Amino acid sequence: MYKKARNSPILLLFRGYYFYAMARYQKVLILFLLTVHLTYGQGVFTNETTTALQKVIQDYPNGFRNIRGALITSYPETSDYHSIVEIPGAVNAVISQYHAGNRDSYSWKSTVYNVEEFEEAVIKYNELFSQIRNTIIKVHDEKPFILTGKYETPASSRKNTTSVFHPFSAGTLMQQLKIELSLQYAVTEWKIVLSVYDNDATRIEELMVR
Image (cartoon, rainbow, N blue to C red):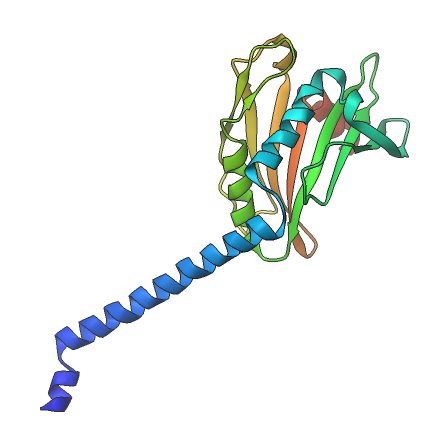
């Protein structure tokens, strides 16, 4: 009789549900612990990220002249400089100057995070996207504007996933401004890169690559 009760459909259903619930709980717990570790272990918080981004965008009309540090490399087509403004905990931040024709173009790029595991990289990518989206930016005499962006879902099968932000209702000085958040795979690790640039800088960089 005991064996029959142990193998009853109701008991088997209950046991199946119990193990399913425990597996779900463990996954949620792991994701929670990873989020806490990444948030507090790397020193990148919402106010610090948006504060740094605000300073970078404010100097965008000046070609990042006021936040440009020491020269790193210089070639006929481009020059790279250290950025004085960095996101706390980021790997690096570089300002590039592209020489083409009568007008130079500029970009600011920061590798915010390096990680080996794709799942951890996605958590950080999502976190940064949420921090940047709908951020209100005020640039000197320009009226405030909001950064709007379309989220691109990462996939481990793709080496590059990019979400692009645009200034919504911005003045003339900011019409060409773009901000990109990219998840990139390089050799053995995933990189999360934040870029601030204009359309001219993108076109020049693409021509140089070709």
